[in-house]
Amino acid sequence: MFSQKNKTAEPTRPQRTANPVASNSTFSVLGADLKIKGDITASEDLHIDGSVEGDIDCGTLVQGEQSAITGSISADSARLAGTVEGSITAKTLVVLKSAKITGDVFYDTLTIEQGACVEGKFAQRPHGSAKKADEPVLSLAN
Image (cartoon, rainbow, N blue to C red; front, side, top):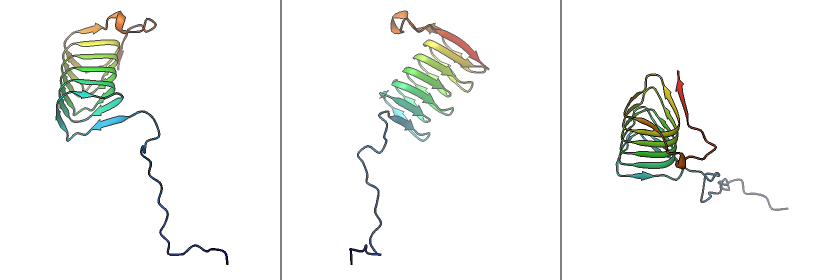
């Protein structure tokens, strides 16, 4: 009597949206099999497992243990576990025990795991680049 649905009708599919991620932030991953020559700029988060030959400028950088970066790094926050050849500038920097860094390191807050290898000088960033309420902190992780 009333309209019945056809039993052989196609199942409904979820509607696709232009932006499948609901949040406003972005997260970029460079896999272990990628080798990039050139500078990288990311407005948000960047995770690198491959190798990069060039400068990196991003909000947050996470480097995998097998990753190699040749070039300068500039980030609000960086967590380094691989090889870096170049200067590093970060507000918050964590150097894990698997990291091997050759270059100067500029930071506001620094944490170094025991066993990390760094060849270069450490220096707090100039006070003009940090908020006055932020005090530079150095800590040693076990």
